[in-house]
Length: 355
Image (cartoon, one colour):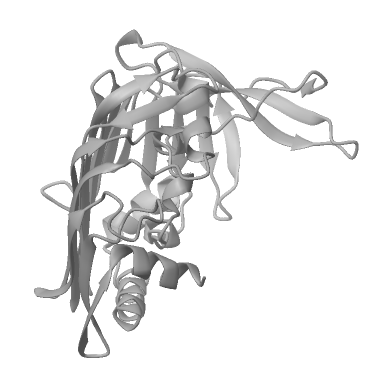
């Protein structure tokens, strides 16, 4: 699998070369001042379960604030940019007009494109969140408030044609600075409107019934098509979401994801059902044996290019070894260097941790 991942990364880099990118997509990236490298997803690495919290996901969707300290320096608010600007051949922006006051326009004479951003679609308000921006030599933090839209839209025009569009919606909720928004949606496309070179969507929600996350993206260039998708559902109970006593008790978890580039495709699935005695909170995860009484079942699989590469199934409860650690009843089978390996989840986790 590591060799396949490296091969897939190389193929993705070929797809993002300037000779492979459609002209419309290059114009859209130039309009927003982005490099094609922004389309390369960060590698996913295994995370220690003890460090997991749904709050991590929520905070990842907004600029993350730091805990306020008694002594701090407050900087001016970072407001959403407004007015009209022109972009020169070096990518520098020059103010042209103070209008519009509720959005931004950037013209690029060299490419003949115009970017238009609307920050208050339908009169929707914006919100201010406090964020940490650095510290002076004495360690005193610099704090500033950043303005975020709750309903926004962006488009890129070239001549009379629209070559890119984005819509964004956010329900801030009462705990935006602590654990992220209650809900967030994002939809975008770029390139030819009838057959976009790039399109994607993201839908996230955390409410009284649990947490859900759905996303997908597709990229088409002269080197082929790449796509990715994910679907996460974690029904459960949340308490004290706005303070340090945050806890999340899931009753089940379902995670499905896929990714493909020319020559490589991966599909993975993880199901945890009938969960019991499992709570994610600072106090629960700092206990000596946080998963000693966990109950439920696990089922997981990984497929590469249509071939099953890994399968796991079994009870999460601590088994006959009575070491207060789960996983010894979950059987794992995977292929390594062309050979079938059979082990337990507990043994595999110990091997991966290097202990």
